[in-house]
Amino acid sequence: MDFILTEEQEMFKKIVRKFMEKECPREYVRQHDEQEKFPTDLFQKMARMGWMGLPFPEKYGGAGGGVMELTLLLEELARAMRAAASAYFVTVIFGGESILHFGREDQKGSFLPRISRGEVQFALALTEPNSGSDAASLRTSAVLQGDEYLINGSKIFISGAMEADWLIVVARTDKAAPKHEGITIFLVKGKSPGVEIKKLRKLGVRAVGFNEIFLENVRVPRENILGTVNKGWQHIQTTLEMERIGIAAEALGNAQLILEDALQYAKERAQFGRPISKFQMIQQMLADMHTEVDAARLLTYRAAWMKAQGIGCSKESSMAKLFASEVCMRCALHGMEILGGYGYTMEYDMQRYFRDAQANKIGGGTSEIQRLIIAREMGV
Image 1 (cartoon, rainbow, N blue to C red):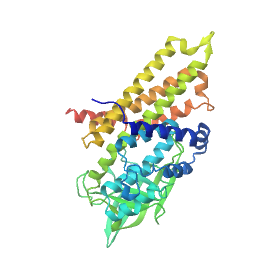
Image 2 (spheres, one colour):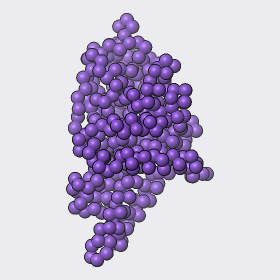
Image 3 (tube, helix red, strand yellow):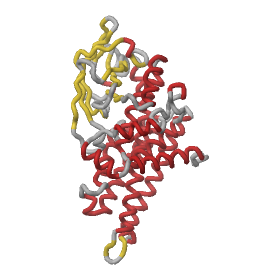
């Protein structure tokens, strides 16, 4: 059993960290969080590094990287800026990987090189006001009329929709089919007639917008179907499995930064004539944080390795996502306690870590849903 990254993977991780420390300093992150500003310029720089096409084959302008490299990238992006990792994910995974796995050759040739160059952005429009955790009960409909589909419905809590050039819209094409059948995925232009996108204010990861989408008689050509008609739910499951690994990696990177900040503060902050890091209660919190972050890393890397080997990892990806997201929140709570009053002020980053951490527990399926998936895979 080998827990060591390859020399190339270690080097890649260091390159991403160095890049983010230079191009995404703390003031950049604070500014984009406060202004709720999408990190477009950072995207362009990542594209020039070849990372926007990291998981795509070279013939589509990609780097031919694997799941492990993608996991390492998301971890390091989130260590510097949680929102940057989220922004990357919605375009490269929800958009690009979906097209790579289910798209026709002409769709791959059209979209993947542009994603790799940072020229186009995507958002996944799945969740609806009445179908959150029960995503398959979606009501948005797509009715075939000649060579076009007429789409009607609404979506909510869609990350990055306002900035997206294209929406991956999941709609019901056969109302008579069972809940998990009769669902189809469509590529819809973000500025199509009949598409209205509204911004929702949210607590954390504020540099990537949270949006509500209204679709009223939106006409979509038949050739914009992604994958097979009425098999969209089966297609989306592959994307959601990678989403759980990705969010685990993002939570891991976020938790690592929280630990580093809390440790540095504890060493510098003096009370009663000595650094607070010398007090056993502080040491206990830091030790727990360090242990749990390491355990989350092992779970996340294992799930990524299994995915890369083509081994089914529904249970393992849910375990990684569940544990890493809850570790991140516990680390944020400990960080707030270690910083005391300073952690509660907007001038310190710890409050943002706390706000961002909750998103990890919700996106990609709540902690409760992950536990249900794990239990199901256990046969109970």
